[in-house]
Image (tube, rainbow, N blue to C red):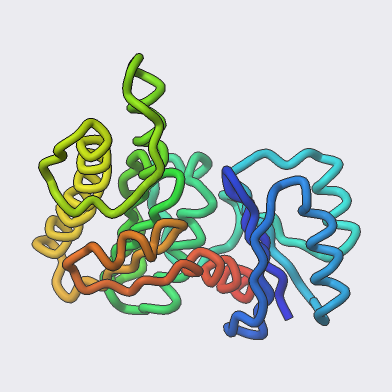
Length: 240
């Protein structure tokens, strides 16, 4: 079995895969990493692992993890199942690498747009030849709410809700409308743009806001919040 650890900006996901089947998933705060890994190692017969981190892990934590399991640490030098033609490969986020790896494996021979809606919203495209040239990074939903509050003196900090009306009848409704409808129009706009340029486009939506956005989008998409985890597992298998 494979142990997959995805260290995000706000939380960590740890998943156990048997071949390509997800059998366990836990989500926890950064300070619980060692304890959660130990628990999974006791529960399952783990033979290999991979760690992906867009946040900072101390050398002490990394050493403790390596002592417990033989982990592959994903970086720009790791072997991957697609052609990475990004202009600055060393700065490419490991979450984006994992998403493209899964796109290449799960939808081999197809044009794929992966939209990862988390802290940021990323749009990454891989063509039917398995070539990846780059994508787009945009502020995520929560970041937009925080920006409106932080950079003004009177606008309140709100939590996301579905915005039914584009015309807000109060300040709070106007904020919700501005944030949510702007994101929906942005996502739909990118989808339409890629569809116009690429035939038979497969669209995947993943990330923490997958379910929130999927039911509000009009396009036909594959909604899979675990797409990046599956990509990390695919990279680990590819390197075995």
